[in-house]
Amino acid sequence: MTRILPMPVQSTKIDMAIYADCARFGGWSPLEKNFIPLRFEEAASAFGFGTQTQYALDCITLAVEAGYFTTRDVLKKAVFADESDFAAFCSALARYDWWLNERHFYAFLALLDCDESSLRTYTDMAREFEDEYGKF
Image (cartoon, rainbow, N blue to C red; front, side):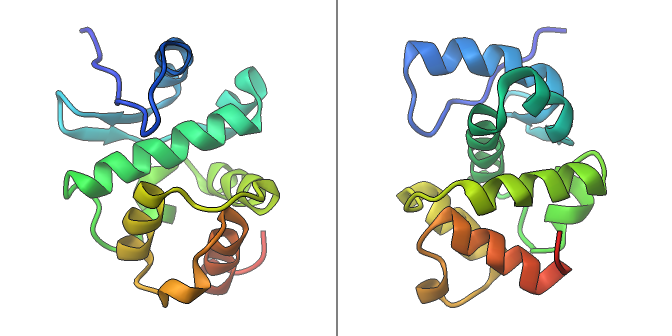
């Protein structure tokens, strides 16, 4: 079966080529309207944490925008293949020291149900996860 790739939040031809490779590690499928749990650690070893972190953020954002994920407990239970993948994602976010883009901001604000003033950067997002799930 052919898998339709998620449209990157900030799309370029290079993004689409990379995302085609990333899709084999899970993520959002807009055609099938389902989410295959991300094998973040495995993908990060293949592509590096920057690429895989962006891919994971985009897939989660697209799933939230489609109404597929609606509560904060999905992050640990449904988004990642296992707890080590979730921990690796949180660790990568802690080093991802940039401002949140607008689509990521609104998707994760809805998912985390937190005060918007505490969610400005990806590092802030990692802190929110740590507050909810403990240290990684």
